[in-house]
Image (cartoon, rainbow, N blue to C red; front, side, top):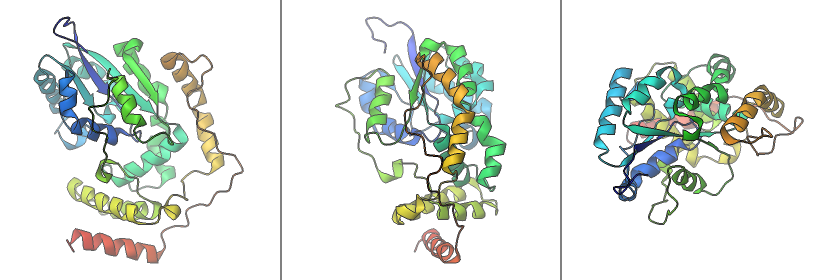
Length: 323
C-alpha cells in the first residue's frame, strides 16, 4: 500500500475469482469491513462487481465506465475490486487495465481442484443467474471443460500484468472457517487483522442447492424467468436446502470416483504448468487434497421423487406467496 510519505504508483488489487472458491464470502467480508479497510488506505467500492456484465450494466462499455468512476473515486488510496467473472474475460484484459489506468494492478485468484469445482460450478449455472436447463453432462461438454483449464484462463492475465503482480492461491475445503478471509487480507497486504469483523451470516454464503432442490430449479428454469424472479426462487430454495437434512443432500455427487480421477488426469498437465510458473513449485504439485479411490462406493442420484418434489414446491409456493 502507498503512503503520503512515499506515494509512488497507487495499487489496485483485483480479485478475479474463480467462481465457487469463496468469492461471495470475500465480497461480503469486504463490504462489512469498508471502514477498517479505509483506515489502512484501501477503498472498496462496494458489494459487488460479481456478474456485473450481465446484471448491473447494460453492456460491456458501461461496465468499463463504472470501473473508471470507481478508480476516480478512490482518492489518494489504493483500490480493491472483486469480480469473479473477470477470470473468464481474457478478450477484454487490455480494456480493463486501461480503465484502471493510474493504478498498478495486482491480481489475486483462487483455484479449486477441477473434479470438485466443475460439480459446484454446474450447480451455480443452474441456480442463478444463467438458469441453465441441461444435464450436468451437457454442461460439461458445452462449458465446463473449457473453463476448467486454469492455466489457459490465467496465463493471459499474468502476461498482461507480469507474473510478479499475480498472486495465485489454492482453495481447499476443510480449513479453518476464517482461513480464506485471513488469507485474502494477506494477499492485499494486511497482516494485522484484529480490527476486522469476521462474523458471517448465512445469507453471505453462496450455499449450493441439494440435489432435489437443484433439480426443481433446473425444471423451473425451462419456463424462462426474468432475472429477479429467478433470484428470488433461488434464494428460497437455498433456505429450503439449509433446513433439509444435509446427509442425503450431500451424498449424490455428479461424478463417480472413477470419473473424478479422469477429470483430475485430464487437467494434470495444465495444473503442473500452473504450479511451476505461478507458484514456483518445481514438482508441479498444485493441490494437496487426497484423491478418491477408483473403486470407492458411489450412489448415483436416483432422481426427484414425487414426494420430495411436492414438499419442495409447497414450501416454495408458500414462501413466494408470503405465507
